[in-house]
Image 1 (spheres, rainbow, N blue to C red):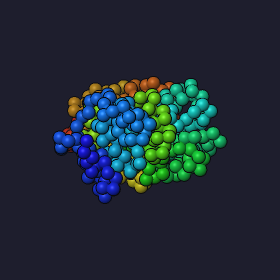
Image 2 (cartoon, helix red, strand yellow):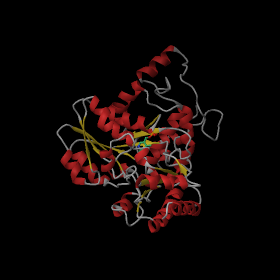
Image 3 (spheres, rainbow, N blue to C red):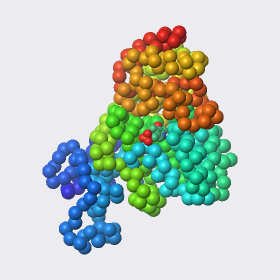
Image 4 (cartoon, rainbow, N blue to C red):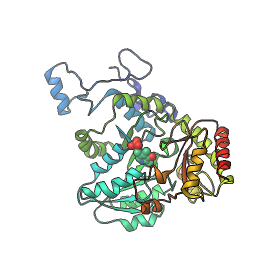
Length: 402
Ligand SMILES: *Cc1c(COP(=O)(O)O)cnc(C)c1O
């Protein structure tokens, strides 16, 4: 296989982000295909027995088995690393595979984890229920309270885990301050960046060690595949992550890797447009409703921090209705254009009621901590004309008497 320049760091280092998104990581086969090929193969054949032995010893480059390496997945991983400014990346089957593998590979029985309390529902289950089953101690803190991270440290604290902006409460936490506290304690700082994408926020620029994604969201961005990614230093990836993941197999299939690889070519265009649309919709809603949360609005409690740390306010808006679940469900049922769906980061705008869907599995007490009320709705803004979204929300709000 010809090594196209997209894999050569001495060349890609000179490229700007828009070029990296289109050409970073690309390898071309002898056919010279312009678009990246899908290598649907589980194994690889060797010219002779010594070649096989040398690859297994690690003495010679080359692929051995698709749980360990695959050309299509490799192109995606290289492109992801370039967009994030990370040394290394690994693609996973889902976002939850990325989160669980990042945490399980890092932590052992007897270790302590501090996590933000406002997390994606399944991440909370991982922190509260699954990790403790393996003897890992966990503490959750208000992630926006920087001092709370410092107070939660213990001598055996090995990792910090947080999400900013958080799902669905849109809390924004100070990455630089939290990373400094974590590093002081000898902890690895792991950030779930699914809500922002590298276009809106690159946590490593603010001190994070590891960035993990649900690539199902903005990266695919068209609601087609489940995927995830873990990014970090070359050393952590080899010594810690792969020591676990090589043998547990959370890696992404070549077909799904190809779908995400092609989507990254338009990530910048899509995310920026969705953020512009979200700001327009949030501005409209703020004038029409009791309470709206959006990091790009001056009314957001951490607006100044958000604007320092993020390139835009993001693509998610949270709405709060006074009439509880009946009014929230009433608004959903009155929508004519926006779909009722718990997915997010899609080109279609989607709305969900977190208390009865995404955060149904966590306790009422935890929902309370996360600011999830019965009247809360989460709106993921897509790529439609923002005026059509505003018109739909306007008629649905009238329908519920607002
Ligand atoms: C969706 C999501 C996940 C889980 O990703 P999957 O691809 O659904 O497994 C994790 N964290 C956040 C913030 C998410 O939005």
